[in-house]
Length: 74
Image 1 (cartoon, rainbow, N blue to C red):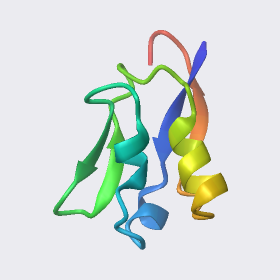
Image 2 (image 1 turned 120 degrees about the vertical axis):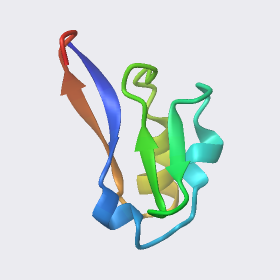
Image 3 (image 1 turned 60 degrees about the vertical axis):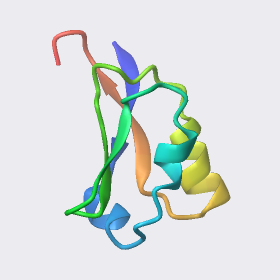
């Protein structure tokens, strides 16, 4: 089991800021869907560093991303 970032799409769509995508250190992990105006996570690439959570929740006070636990089979 390990943690990955998970975007709350309904909350994220309100802001259209893309800041989490800019700060993610892992390429092609936290992406932005232009037509839906939301960020999304490629769970198989996420390393669980939680930088996106820090940017979204602590710096921007938006709370659109949380860390969720997954098992190896998810």
